[in-house]
Length: 470
Image 1: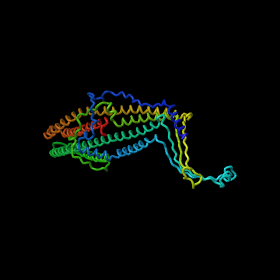
Image 2: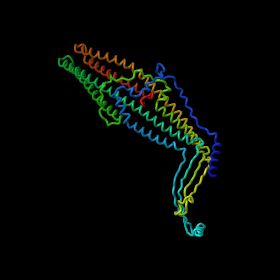
Image 3: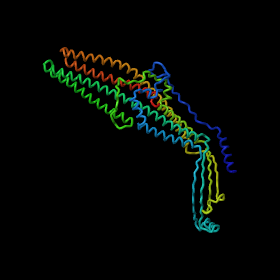
Image 4: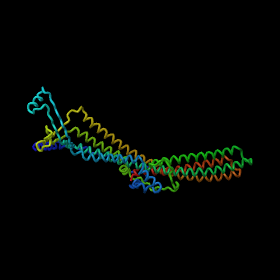
């Protein structure tokens, strides 16, 4: 009991001696965020990223594909396993402040030389040439967390767990956006295929008229060849679009964890709708919402805790060890209680003196790594703001492009009608008709592409703002 009291007295004195304990405080980096994103008319606290993905994407078919993706996408499943693994490490870290306790049983037989002092002593006092020793004991080791090293180790585990959680959310935002992009791209290809087939009928009509005029001597064989080439060009486009549709269906199937297969869809691109009010909100809100930025900040917090560990390693450490159990040199009376009981307690303070500058190096490297992570955090914020601004400017300009492309399509469709009437009346040549049809086809394909790009820009904005993980 006196020994134990002395150990506790030593502990108290050690704690008093290091009462100047310091903790490495975390100072959030100054990000110097602007009040609003570029290309926004007014700063608005509301943001489309606050919407759950089921509210943002109202198409029930698309919702079904996103649900399948969240449930079956393999990247997401791997991320979930990583979260579970980190969670187990976090549970283990909660026990770091408790002592290590082991139980061991040993048996030993020693036979010294008969010509040695030990051998002669054994023979004289015990009347035998060997000695036995049997031991069963609990061993305890505990280190007092004077400098907060263990707390910092627990903080590292917590930050690592939160990083995997944010990484999972970041992957989900990417998966949701990728599925939506693939789905809208598929609708665009469907519409382009429909346009190409309609233009193929026009090409057939033009070829039929040209052949009749050639037979009547009103045009040359070159006109027939040109009309045929126009038809063949449209047929080639149809084949390419059908190929792209199949490839996009395969990609979408793989995204949701399914084998490549046909994708059922019942709506057309003109029936799609996304929220009309696409407010981006404030940059500060984006930083706190976007998972990959939050993950980078957690890396910074982890490195701050590692600095605390490296700093604590340079200070004295108080360790207490204890051993207790039964011991006997005869197996017959090994477990005779209380005669075979034994115990010992040891407490000590260790101050590193010369470690070949290893501890100092570890501390300086930890500080440098923290500075690197500050820069990485700032860079992640800048990248996120750039993505938001890119999506905003794309959406605004694509609105104008869609309007101009719509007007161009209407103009060129009227041009086809005029060219065909003039051609039939002999007031225009075959080249003017073919050119009008080609221009109209390209304009219609371009209009559909612009519409899809605008949908894509809105989805990109939703993801860039941190939407899609709720």
